[in-house]
Image 1: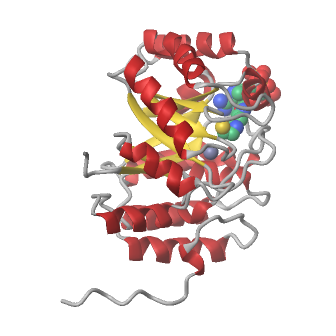
Image 2 (image 1 turned 90 degrees about the vertical axis):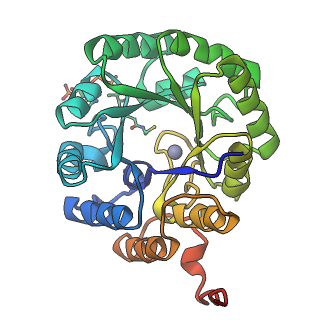
Length: 302
Ligand code: COA
Ligand code: ZN
């Protein structure tokens, strides 16, 4: 059993993208500073997408350039839907992208206006143009789609084949609308691990139905050592009706640290950061639980 869990903080992308009011660049950067100060080592900074689709991400280049320069030791990534976005990311010094495609074609059309065939063809162009760019495939709607419902594990395996053949070595299984359950998580992960043993897996679970923690833990207990979450549980998808907050980073870090997993993240500092974030974003939708706990825990006796 692995004892280290890499927590990928994706709030500056998945959380901020849903805010109706533009969150000023300086506020975004302060929240990122807080996260890094808490020990976060893997951070999805932004997305290079059309500002017409996601106005909140219009400052993607400034966010990326500033952070890459300021924190050379942090593993930064950015979400990218096309070659245009990959170029922008690369030009800002981003070395790792989350290339987003949805398991369900109808969500892929709603989200990025592409068929499955077009999304695959676009990734081929990116791989050719930027062979040194590390690609993590973000497979949205893996566990269920607002338009097409659920698909079985073998459909996930079949879908991934073209991407694995193209050289993708890391896949992030995303529960975009928070409909997974632990049994389904185990089945899909086990099927993908069996079919593609050399592919590294991550999970990205929304907490819509209070299943974020159990589903993420199920994945970890299947051997997945990289998970995604957002500070405060801020999150959602503007193109998936019903999507709400992500699993909150401080909640999952509390659980993992207490279970003896090494996350490298300081829970108390993270909690201070998430409480501060809540005051900066008063209209945000937060799914985090620790933010609302007033009583501090008694410290263990020495
Ligand atoms: N970054 C910034 N601008 C981009 C871009 C990118 N990655 N890709 C395209 N654009 C711009 C184009 O320059 C064009 O601008 P113009 O209208 O001023 O000429 C416009 O967006 C449309 O380009 P086109 O290639 O025709 O895209 P589209 O209309 O088919 O939309 C996407 C496709 C992928 C660009 C758009 O659907 C998108 O950005 N989706 C992101 C969805 C998302 O982030 N969802 C949540 C995360 S999962
Ligand atoms: Zn998400």
